[in-house]
Length: 209
Image 1 (cartoon, rainbow, N blue to C red):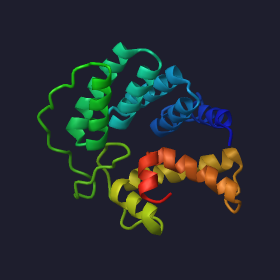
Image 2: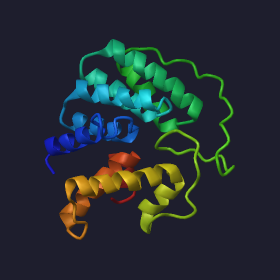
Image 3: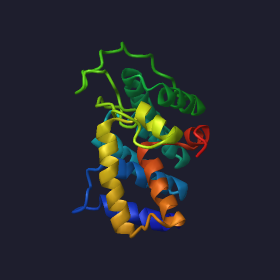
């Protein structure tokens, strides 16, 4: 699918009267803007994610990167500093490292780590934190599909986020009129799922996707 078509699709999803408080949809829209080199728009959409979900350290990271690409290092430093503190508190090691690297790239100081706080109890009492949202949640009882992708989802994605993707994926199928028996339509669906769950290129490559 053409990137502009994807942008229009995500814009429809977050439009007033649709689902404007869906942080995941805003995250996907931001990624599409970034792919189209619309860096200022990407930054705004990622920042909308951080407003809706202040624990989403990955959104802070990518908002900062988009602001750098848009030529706004001062705002980038402010956003990245906030994101670094969020990632430190949440124990999100990969976003934390990436944010530190971005801060150094614009000669901004990396803040000292805050004193770790105890993670809130999760609904199932297992201390599981969803890597996609940074929120405590319920671990899936088993991988939702076979293969390395299913195992990755089982290890990293909370049931609440997976259930939210199923609902969002249904919207994608209906609004884009996808026929998943067709390979090209299944590929579009998979791309939306990867973006929604936060599987970046490196993670996908490590899984052989």
